[in-house]
Each structure stands twice: as structure tokens, then as C-alpha cells.
Length: 163
Image 1 (cartoon, rainbow, N blue to C red):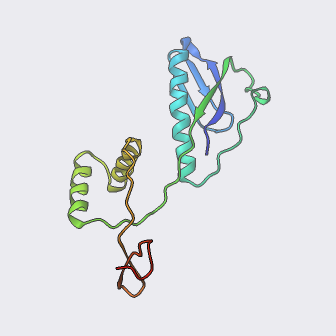
Image 2: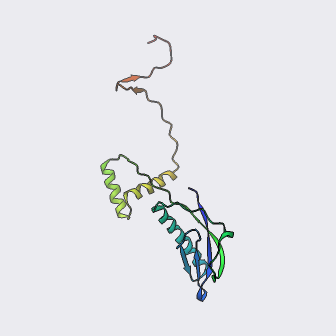
């Protein structure tokens, strides 16, 4: 799912403070001593809210157009702003077969850095996908194993019956 852009409302509060809220996410609010502080906290609050909705299996709402936002009576709106959020990427269970000794080493190392086995595999796979390895050209095998399990030598092009 691609990045979603949600509108937020920045309001002036008492004693020069600011608050921010999201029309599409009731209860998702943030506050700060400055506009910048409130906006930064709003970005964090939206990310946490979206993660919570995903964990609950709730679909994300379509963003409300700014011109359709109706602030509550008596609010002192300072600005409208947009916050981008990347929806969580759902996980999928996979089975892999690895030597037990390697799994033990992975578990020990993952625990020492405060990660689970799954998190470690995801992290390691992400790093490996960024590597720029040279492409390898594999030569075709000289023989093939057939369904019977027997080996058969590759036939080489040439004259029939020549030895």
C-alpha cells in the first residue's frame, strides 16, 4: 500500500501552546509548546494510530479533503497541514530450513541486541537485498538426475556413431 496523506488541524492553545488533531482519526491528538513541536508530535501520533488500526484489522479511512473539515465552535485554528504516513506492511509466516547450529547462533545474537528471531531475519534480509553482488553465470550441469534417480550423461552434438 502506498503512502497516505492525511489532513491535520493545528490549533492555538492557552499560553502560546499548540494542539493538533486529525479529522479522520478521532482521538489522535498531539500538543506542543510551539507549532513545530506540535506538528512533530502529530506525525508520531498518526504513525502510532495507524499501526494500532492495522493491529486491530481496521481499514484506513480515505483522507478528508481540507475544504470539508469543520473545526469545532470556539476553536482557534492556526493552520491546516498534511501528514504522510506509510501504512504497515502486513507480515506473512514462512518456513525456512537452516542448520540448527546456525539458528542457535542467530537466536543468541538476536537476543543480545534485543531482537526476536523474526525481526533479525527481516533485518538481515533487508540488508542483503541492498548488497550489489556480481552476477554469477552458472554452467549447465554435465549430467542430469532423472526421476528414477539414475544419472545420464549429456549428449554432445556431433557425428552419430563416432567414438
